[in-house]
Image (cartoon, rainbow, N blue to C red; front, side, top):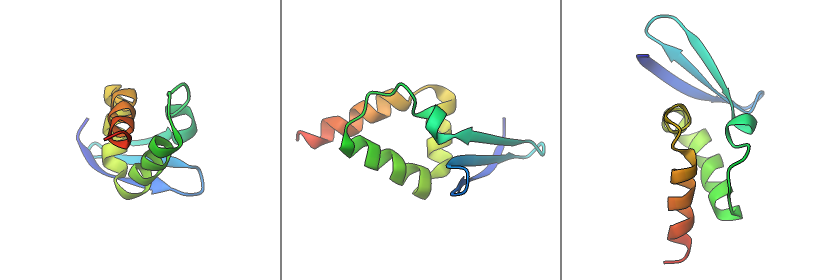
Length: 79
């Protein structure tokens, strides 16, 4: 999937992804983060990522690497 860009949709709490082929994909952040083991620190980081870097958030979700990213964020808390 060749992604053109992604934006955070405040009305749906989602990431809206647009592709070169004209497809539109909406990633619901509530569903994407369901089941993740987070701390308050990593939750704030996830929220900031969704708002500031929606394309990175979408890539993490689509590649299945969100928990690994959250774990890395939490490890910074203890350094």
